Image (tube, rainbow, N blue to C red):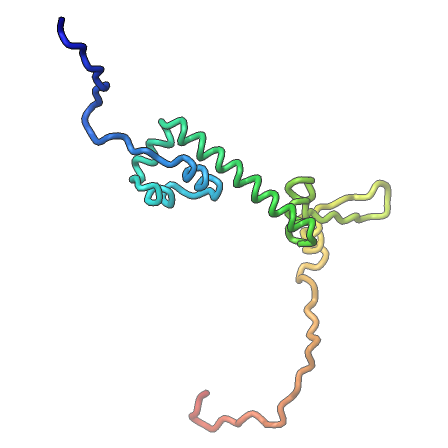
Length: 159
């Protein structure tokens, strides 16, 4: 009776064996929204290999997208805590992005009938028509006249 055959490993094509990546690292890079150029050397692969993995490796894509989602949640939580803690800038930003607030100024003009409501651009145009030279500039800093008299020019000399 012939000896039993050994199970043969599947044959691979030419080239080096596939690079094994640490998907936890990939997820961490996703959380920080790292670029391909930043990730490739830290993962020990070329930029071309990384771009290829982003197209073909389902585990890579999943880890990176999961990391990005976690990073966004972390950033939102941090911004929310700043706003709740009294950071006015964070509060304004969240109000604009989450509540739909805007910076549009509205000006009511005219006492007859329903008021005309202008946005900031229309109000600027109206002011430009009413005051073509613009608003007057008022000099509030008193000028101190120097006691020294300006030098008189002598003939043939130029300043």
